[in-house]
Length: 176
Image (cartoon, rainbow, N blue to C red; front, side, top):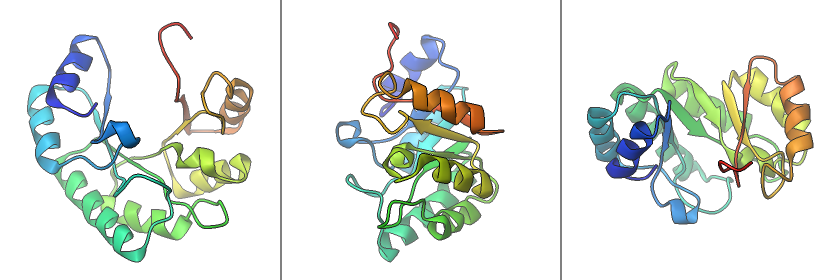
């Protein structure tokens, strides 16, 4: 969701959690703290907050990483139920150092890995790295344009995920 109204509507439609972001038109970026606080006042379901400083790739400069670290601290302190992150290296791996820095700033707030995972060169390796990091869930389409196209990979990931929740994303609707 990207507004108070959409959060309230999600709750009214029996959503059991929401992912909060801004600028969904570009794939989502970090929402404002004020938006989070207002939604927290209006709905009583878990709020997962996307931390993404800009649209585009998931290769972050040191300045962008510093912003992500500060956002993780702020949203964690404000009571976010989960933080949704993803950082990559130029060679297509999870940027473990960057993600650890963000997770340290989150101070125990659970971490979800977003679809940056689908950009990894080796999803099995990325899954193992996510386990080492302590990520609680991964939003993925199995490396494909839609979860429907990646269903076999999703099944494989789920079978190997251990305690990580594999959440199908991209192109999901009531019909599929």
